[in-house]
Length: 400
Image (cartoon, rainbow, N blue to C red; front, side, top):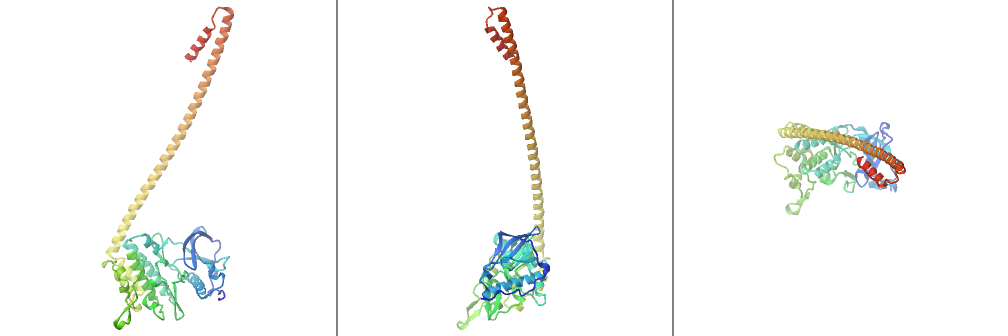
């Protein structure tokens, strides 16, 4: 087992933060070696990326060391990169239990893979915007000195805002599973097989910015079909029984066949997945082509429809809000009237009780007066029957 390596980078003190609350009951995603939680920093929700404990708790094997160095690598890159289509770093801190760095990033709404899973189709303008955003991020990375190649541009590593704006994440290939690192000639070739171009699957692997463009083409195919990329065999029997490479367009023909030949993005898709890296457009060139697509009538029509639908939705939401306020007002009025009726009923009840007590007191006083008169009368006229007083009392009660 290897010793726990020291960080190969010096993290700027400006990025060291404190007071991050990790909401470990809210997991945003995880791989074999890392997990991303929702967190809170200075009142803002954020994403907190941590390595799992077992990566270092019993020392490091070769793969574990590679995972740790990739995590450090991502920390280093996020500290140095600034682009609107790359997930923003909020800060770093050291985990008190594992003593490993923790990455704190802006919180995005969902991944591209999740969006494609829960929908059957997307408006054209959203398809174009997502691919354009990713191409801009790649153009920025590839233009750096030295260039940065993402190397694992799968739909899981493209994150979206609620407005469907795309940003790249996992720049250091920090989330690693058993299929994410393939070693040829002791050279790690990170990535997900379905998104890998031919030159990366060969021995030795050839890594270049062109592999990111190929992966973007596969993502575009996934966006247009809502199908997870499942290419066919890369080798087929040739003349005299020798194997031959199957062109990528042939390997993916089933999914390509689902894309309309008139779709404005189909030509770019086919350009991006060409077998030869030099035959593919650069990310910069691709972003320019997508800028042109945004001037096409089909794109503008899609955007106009979306704006109309948005206006209609906004108007509907406003009507709903007005109705909700009206319901609240009516509920308040009803509550006030109910309380007023309760007060009136209570007051009426009190008045009735008071009147009943008053009548009862008056009747009792008159009865006492009658009885007193009867007593005096009986003493003066002994022959007067006692029933006369009773009849008089009943008369008085009825009169009341």
